[in-house]
Length: 196
Image 1 (spheres, rainbow, N blue to C red):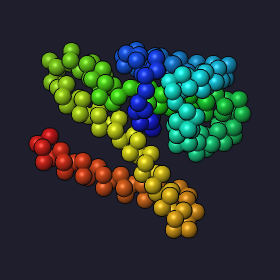
Image 2 (cartoon, rainbow, N blue to C red):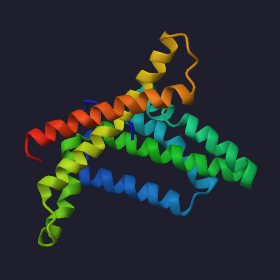
Image 3 (cartoon, rainbow, N blue to C red):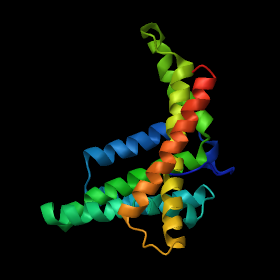
Image 4 (tube, rainbow, N blue to C red):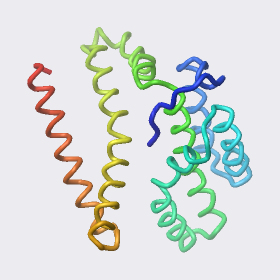
């Protein structure tokens, strides 16, 4: 999930957050249980008009796709070698569709609404010591870290290009990790200062 919330008034923006999350979970679960090309392909094709009906352009679709293209390519090459091209297409397609579905939900629902919806599950667990406020904080940090990781990777790639270095994994990943560790340290300090 790499998307940021995009302002809009489409039917997907107006959809209840719980409905959007449950629908996404259902699609991803079905694809996980039945990862067949005849199911993956139509869902992938249907995502394009879904993005457009939400007022999102193809650049929003590409933003979610570009972050996993390298992983998908490695996965395809590995699976072609192990199980053949059809199975490789099914597994890579399952991954791509899952990310794009999650991205669509993130772009049409505010993080606060998603956090409140998901943390509502923690209410019945209060008797076991689970505090809703802490669950909401954990969820907000987790969801917020997803685009931060994507931004760190993108920044490291751009920095490598600016220095005239070919942006390969061995140069990009360590730089991105340094950025992420620094940000995590700052978040930890801020939480400690507030007694959390």
